[in-house]
Amino acid sequence: IRCRVASVKNERHLQTLLDALTVPPFLLVLDGVQDPHNLGACLRTADAAGVHAVIAPKDRAATLNATVRKVASGAAESVPFIAVTNLARTLRSLQERNIWLVGAAGETETSVYQASLKGPLAIVMGAEGTGLRRLTREACDVLVKIPMQGSVESLNVSVATAVCLYEAVRQRDL
Image (cartoon, rainbow, N blue to C red; front, side):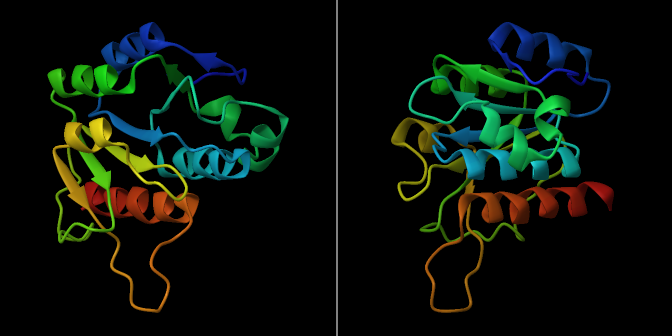
């Protein structure tokens, strides 16, 4: 199910969307991404990777606005953007549907390339600077990191999102 108009959807829309899928769900969860440029880039990558919906908290996070729509280059109109009141509760409801929650966290030992990203999946990305909040981190089934070879400690959230989503696409296409 794809949207035609860029609008923020709610939890009920998410449940309807998941019920209608005939393939394993592939979701992106953004835990408090605040920069509209990052949100737009994440939406654009989510669309390109075939993500069924992007989920974010209603409060203390970027929402659909003119900047997001411009950066998303049309993806804001094609990928459902679900703003939820309680992200931890939403993550639990996804787990009840047997959706595997894979959170990105630089301090873990498991590489994104070692984790299984097949089947019903939600990639969970943290906010700029602070990463995943405690309850979000605890809700994840597994935490993964992107191996860093150079001197920088982390990637921009939209770049990290692209790396994780496309590793999932690579594994799912095998």
